[in-house]
Structure formats: structure tokens, C-alpha cells
Length: 204
Image (tube, helix red, strand yellow):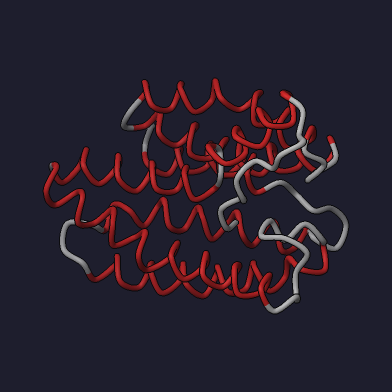
């Protein structure tokens, strides 16, 4: 789930396009959009920005640092954790950090509404971990579909925009060779199921 490297020289036009789409459609992008837009919608700009950036600092920055470290010490092939054997460590560290975020959000005045989003992220990670023995589900697609669906509850325009980006991201992940079609479909299914569940829980 860490950021992808910049496009490499020698890639064709489609390869470069796929790489940039993957960068723009990274799970970190979607989680940041959800945290910031949801917090601003409920708390106003100033308080919402504080809450949104707190989510980014507590969860996303440490996960990104962990991913880069694993690549630098040679434990992982790339920052996408492209091998199924690399994924359990990613899922476990992410779950621990997101759980810590959940505990903090539960105690923070005015931010309890974010619990649905945080619990949904934990559900995606757990499903990915449980399925990893059989299939390496695409987290890019899982978070794209989850965020796009869940955002319909408070920002329909943003939700629709994210969902419209999903087919391009689907193509990009397969084009780059990061996932098979089946893996991208699995991620799509996880994101939709969790997103719909979050909508139902939130009352929309």
C-alpha cells in the first residue's frame, strides 16, 4: 500500500499511463480523500482538516515507512508487496495501526462518526488477509470501490467521481502486471461488499 515509484524510462505510452493511474489510484489516496472529505463535511474546514491529517499521520505515514523499509532491506520485491507471501506482514501492521486509530477516534470528541470508516478499513484488511492464501486481492480496487460507495452517503459527487475512475484503475493494475484479472475482480468484490455494508450502517 506504499506509493509506487515514478514511471521508468523505456515504458510505452500505455505503460506510463497505467503507472500514473496506479499512483493516482493508490489506497493512500482514497483513504486520505475519505478522511478529509468526511471530516470537513461533519466538522467544518478547520476541525475537519485537523482530524483528516491526524488519520493520515497515525495510519498512513507509518504504513508507508514500513513498506519502504521492507523493500530497502530486500525483504520485499517492491512497494506493492506483489508476492502473496509478502502480504501477511502488510495486513498485520496495517491492522494494528488502524486499530490504534479506531481507539483514538472513539475517544476524540466530534470524530466518533469516523468509526464506521475505520472499521470498514479493518474489514477490508481482514478479508484480504483471510483470502490471501488463495488469491492476492487488489487493495487498489478494494479501497477504490469502498471509498466510492461509502462517499455516496455524504458526498455523492465525490463518490460518483471515484466510482467512475474504477474501470481505469482496473485496467492499470492488470496492464502493469501487478495483478491478474481474477485478483482485481476479488478486490472489487471486497470493496463493494464493505462499501455497501458501510452505507447500510450509516443509514443511507
